Length: 79
Image (cartoon, rainbow, N blue to C red):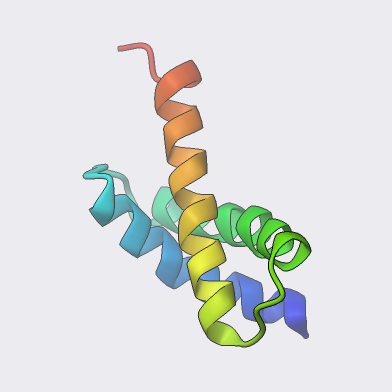
């Protein structure tokens, strides 16, 4: 159930993160960024902080998505 919550929160986080970092991406890419970022950020945030609840998951999801965007821009996006 917590995994499902991370996926749902991740979809919103992907949208927010792509807007914060001014990334033009299609809807599937935005959702994938958010979901992967939610998984990364959610697990890392739970391990590092003693915060609980949806607010911590959303913050972790946004940070994870932003990290994923940064990694993509730094290492994969060679236009």
